[in-house]
Every structure is written in structure tokens, then in C-alpha cells.
Image 1 (cartoon, rainbow, N blue to C red):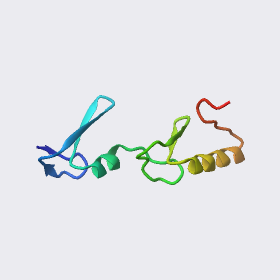
Image 2: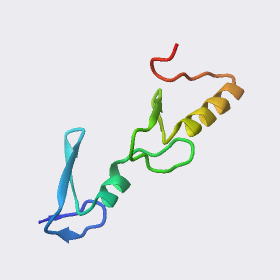
Image 3: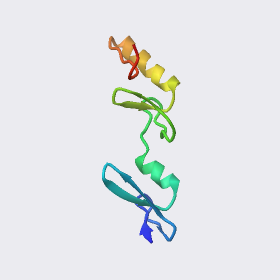
Length: 85
């Protein structure tokens, strides 16, 4: 049994996730998501699926990514999606 990194629960059916050469034991996906999933740069929700990445920022959806682009454009800077022309 391994103690969950997030909540401390000692659970016989725990699992491990390795990220950046560091291994974390968890008792449920909820705890793994809470600790390891990136946070949307616009709305703050956890990105648990295929998010949108612009530069070094991660967004939960196109709507949040576009909202960030509008803010940056209004501030006089531009950001494009990786691979965009």
C-alpha cells in the first residue's frame, strides 16, 4: 500500500504516476488531477483532456485561449498557436 500524495489516504489499490522523472502515489484519479493537471491560464479550471497550448500557457478550451489572445492584442502584444501561420 502507498499513501496518497494529495490526501494522505493509505489505500491498498493505489497507483503511481511518473512525471518529469518523479513518481507520485495516488488513491484516486481526482487526487492525481488535483496535484498534476495544468491549470487554465484564463479561467483557472484543471485541464484534464486535450487543452490548448499557446507558448508556455495552457488553456482548457479555444474560448479561453481566444480570450487570452484578445487581452494580449489589446495590450499591444500578439500570441499565436504553435504551428499557426
